[in-house]
Length: 404
Image (cartoon, rainbow, N blue to C red; front, top):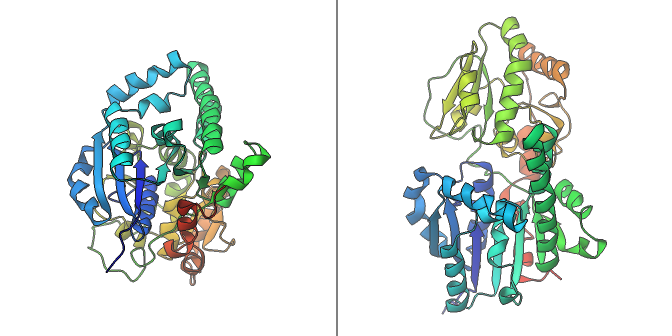
């Protein structure tokens, strides 16, 4: 007779399925791994109507599911209340009374003892004395407050003031959550170390890294996938194209790198592959040779046929899934130092870190002039970044064995 599994409350700011963008890839794999040991009760938001169709699929991993549609205009208005309460706007943006009510009922009805919160914005649902007896673990993923700080550094005027305010208040909240929760997880050793510098030494042993991984069977050069009609010579960038860091990266690339490459290699194309391209990204398609795909069913064909992948991130935290996926398909990559942070692959002809315009142009030209005869990127991923390897310690944190 099989024993009943303990119940786990999982709170995520975006539905963790399908795993088709950075945060959803991580939250899905955490959910999938924990479902082997726990009955998962999932509360989450849906910010893309396209994802509504996947709610029934979650029953493969979850005992119960409670989804709330995130109306962005309503959320933005709610976020402004942060100015009245002197809170980071991120918190009221992601607050919904119905979800708070569901959390309270679920904790009582399901005798919840274990909670995993994904991202700082969801901690508020269990960040009260009512829940202090539970084992509460937060996966910050990366330091959100530092992203706002980076945004501030790249902005001026009222935007700069607004972003600086959000960075300051969100960092205060992140610190408070770390004090109250049993364990705080981050996506890389670098990110965990950076966060330890922001909190008192007494909290350092509550801060841990759980690295991102990649599905090496799915992202494999030998995997079979549907053929796509593609240019014969192109380089590729993949990612959610409404995400500011990705928008910033491709705009910088098209302005500073692409004209030199296109002039030198007239047949070359640059493919920007990912859903919900912003107006700035769509405008890039006016440049000769730039193709903006929009949402695609499968990004693997686009990576597989590319000469190499680029990740010229100027704003970044944590580990870039786009780099892991390209490397898992044994594709050469040209990255900024920020994009390679946390992956730390040894520098090689197939894994080039290039910062600054001239360096990045030269790295691309090198790969275009001499196609690689041998690439070790996939082996590095297999040795270091399968989900089975990276999630080994996760159950210990959730059970409380490694927590304070």
